[in-house]
Image 1 (spheres, one colour):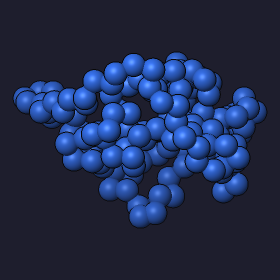
Image 2 (image 1 turned 180 degrees about the horizontal axis):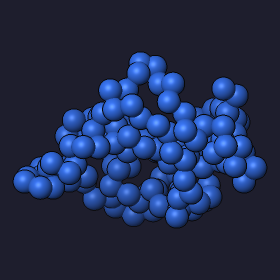
Image 3 (image 1 turned 90 degrees about the vertical axis):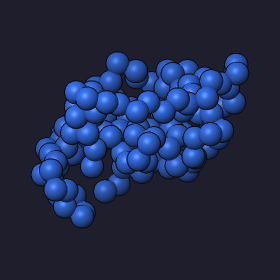
Length: 130
C-alpha cells in the first residue's frame, strides 16, 4: 500500500509459549505526517487476508514510546533481544524500507522467562490470541 519506506521500526509482540502474535504491533513512522496519514487510511481496516475469525477492526493509536532512538533505547537491552529469542520475534529497524542491524546491547541481557498463566489470568490472556 506504499508505506514501506515511511517507517523505521516495527515490533510485533508474540506469546512466546505459542509463538502467536498478540494482535497488535508497534510502528515508528519517519514523520508525524506519515503517521497521521496511516492512522486516517488504515484505522478501521477490516479486509484481512485471510479473514480473521474475530472480525478484527484495525485500531490505530499513539504509543507512549515514540521516536526511532526512543524505541532503540526501549528494546536494545530488553530480554526480547536475547539470543534465546528467534529473530522473527524481535523488533526490526529499517532504513528506506531495508532492514538494518539493531545496535548491540550495552549490558548483559537477562534470559526471557516464559510464564505459564493459570486461572483467571490464563482466561484473560487467551482472549488476545489469534
